Length: 317
Image (cartoon, rainbow, N blue to C red; front, side, top):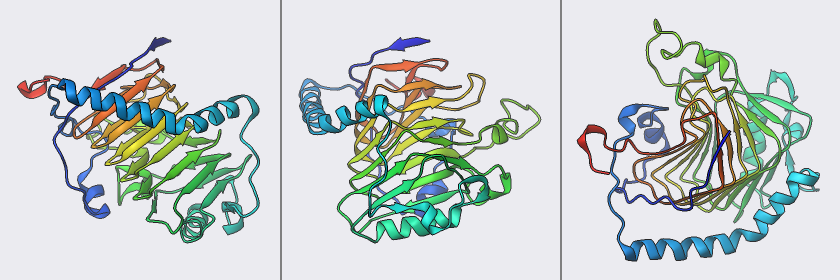
């Protein structure tokens, strides 16, 4: 397994206006080469200095949470507390077979509309979920999702006919923290066999990104295990001030287009200590992104870290 440490990756890209969720999802492909033009330019000294200062402050702000997340590595995630919203209480069976989608919708509605704002997927449960969007804004100033068990994607291709690009979407949630040592399983084998890279007689179509954070500002994602995406694993889109710490991505090296962590149209993003095994880029950074920092990255199998389509279409890098 190759290990690379990237202290700072900078990109100054053109700006994009925010879209309503419906238009955004319609216009965003899962992995389309046309979505990867190069808009990267040079970075002058003043901007580089500003970038360094901003990330020094960001690291100091999140240091206690990072230490706590490291502690979870050794001791396991703490038990849930009184007052948290548990998906079981809203009808989730967690047996790996029953469709728990409606229970997740009800539990999210309760979480987002309350002052508690902590949603829990309990340990030793495997929740079977269709494509779903968790939307904000929420009533509480901060929202937490604790994933202690497993969330697994539906294996029925017909469930993705309305949106072939997304499975789990978190949209417009401020001060959002996702944590726990649980697993998010994209059930990718159902999609890989139908992709043109695997089966040349199949048309080349997009497949769902496992988890998408769209317009989620002040976002922290700690300690998750993410595996077997049908296409990309984790995507940060149109988001500002993001910290992703100790994320583990696991997919076969032969799985097509399974980027580990994807960043697009986002700003001030720290990716710290990820361990990524994937069939495509371990980290991909594309148009509209700036102030991206990747630290202590373990990558392999995978294609390393990519920045746009550098030089593609005779563009400058």
